[in-house]
Amino acid sequence: MRAAVLEKGARELVVRDVPRPVAGPGEVVVDVAGCGFCHTDLHYLDHGVPTAKPPPLVLGHEISGRVAEHGPRVDPSVLGRRVVLPAVLPCGRCALCRSGRGNICSSMVMFGNHTDGGFAEAVVAPADLLVELPDEVDLVKGAVIADALSTPYHAVVRRARVLGGETVVVIGCGGVGVNVVQFAHLAGAHVLAVDLSDAKLEVARRLGAAETLNPQSAPEFGKAVRALLPGGADVVFEAVGSPKTIGMAFSAVARGGRICLVGYSDRPAEVPVQKVMFLEYTMMGSLGCRPVDYPRIVELVRRGRVQLDPVVTGTVPLERIGEAADALRRGEGLRTVVVPRAR
Image (cartoon, rainbow, N blue to C red; front, side):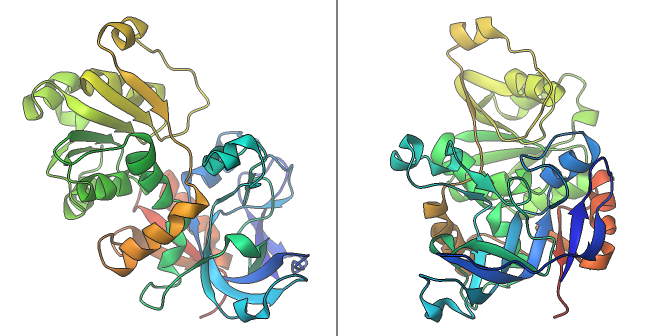
């Protein structure tokens, strides 16, 4: 089968033939319909972030498709089902999993990091973690539920616990941040979306942002936020992953407010510890999503409460996967989905 492979030391993915995966006990093979190209994939390519499994490795963790084969100890009725795969697979046995925090499982496996991912015609997955997609959800676009929707859901609902009537600032309206806007709006919050791209801010408005702010027009960011949200925001989500935007988050949060870090950065950032103490800020990280929450997200999409169309801004065949990477490097669009197989 064809797959886009990260080779050792490479900055571009190589599309070549690789062996088709074989389902072991409790596993299935999924024919991939779509796999979203995420900033995490770009970190591996451009920023020297190491993968847990050394290259060669097939990247891609936002995966949807149809179950094509099954291994021993799997009910054959699973064949043909339309599914999305959780981006992070918990072990189900460790203390964190047993306490309901499987998204930070101590033995987690992530597609395109610990094991081969979805930039391929097929991928192997645990049968007990498949999430079925109803016919009303587009199978290709539904790939982004695996991360671009599930990660913001977890951040808004499980970590920051946004309440109706609260004020929320979302810094960074890319493929993840714009969905933080969606879920915060759905929770009943008054949302201020922040980005350097006016086009992305327009999408954020379509998805529920009551107000928008381009920092290029606001030299003093904290003051600009407070002019729109007197006293600052109850909750600030940082969805970029840079020391600068983390600093911006602290300048925008209200006394007693919450800061939720959703973006990934491998660089240290300054934290005003005296303000965290004196103003009783709560600072938290947010990673991925618990598999148990995926059906809730799928149902929100099925009912039209959460939108996919504005989020998926392009599709490319596997052979042109480099275009997806280049678009992300240029900051164009929100999510490009790679389609490994001809439809």
